[in-house]
Length: 224
Image 1 (cartoon, rainbow, N blue to C red):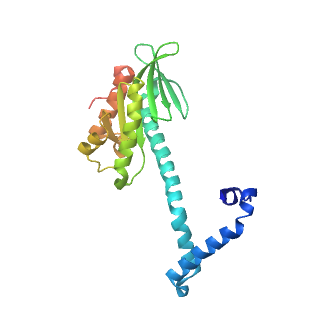
Image 2: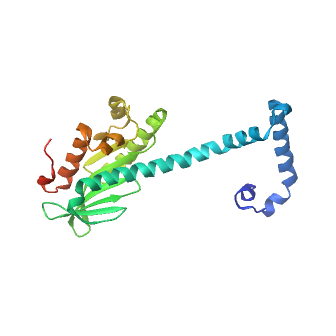
Image 3: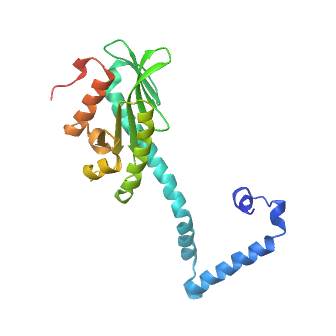
């Protein structure tokens, strides 16, 4: 009942009668904290640090969301660089290309998974080619959770008929054996740093599979 006071600066009618009780509870908690720290140690810097301890998890959550969005945009840009010369249209969320079979292929941002690639077979009828889940976080200690999230996303993608499910992580020292156990539905694992480099075996594998799956003309494949 007190949540509106913190979030919107309003005192709900139901909370009015219990304001004294709320204040007493908050003061009691503050006294206990100060006694535990020691009055002589209380300073402006200490109070700032205590505030960060409270806000820290929220700030980290926001930072993780930002990293995720940046990771998705990075992978999308790499794909655009690969297929761009065959693009009929492109914007920040969708690329439309025409493949060698003169069929329309769409590469799009999606909510779950993050990037999808589909071939238009007939009006309102698609062949689902690739579902890509991007995990932009760099914290290795949280890799198990990220792979678990990718697995859930790819299970949905399989049910939707996607042929390939890829997971792209922002952790370089990933153990592929562990990754396959955590996300058995993932066909291919890639690292953002490797596909951004636009060189090396991992990038070439990513590039060649994009070309093969979308069906763009084979001259687009560079000699290795």
